[in-house]
Image (cartoon, rainbow, N blue to C red; front, side):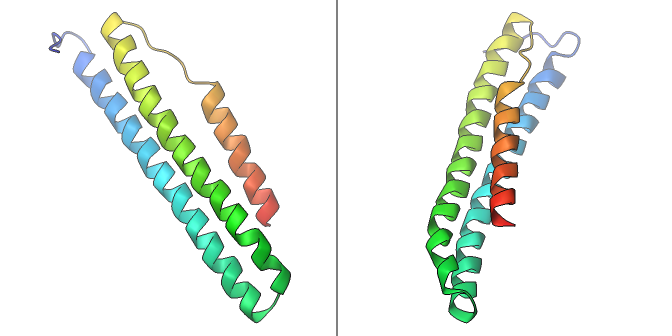
Amino acid sequence: LHLENSGSVARDHLASERTFLAYARTSLTIASTGVALVQLFTLSATTMHQDLEKYARPLGAVMIALGLFTLSVGVARYFLVQEALIRGVYPVARITPTILSFALVSVVIVVF
C-alpha cells in the first residue's frame, strides 16, 4: 500500500506506529509487574505472613492477563487506526483506556 504524502499523512502513520509501541511497552511493564508481585508475595510469605502466598499466583495471573489485554488492544487499535487514516478519518479511543485504567487502579487498591 502506497499513499501520497500530502499534508500530514506520513506524520499521522508514524504517530500511529509510536502509539502501538507505547501499548507494547505498557503491556510488557504490566506483565512484568505481575511476575514481580508473585515473587514479592512468595518471599514475603517465607519470612513473615504465610497467608499472603495464596494470593500471589492469582494476583500475578490477573496482572499478566491485563498485560495481554493491553497488547491485544494495542494491536487492534493499530490496525483500526491504519484503516481509518487511509479513509481520512481518525477514531477516538475512549472505552478501552478507561477500562484498563480502572482495572489497574483496582489491582493497586487490592495490593496496597
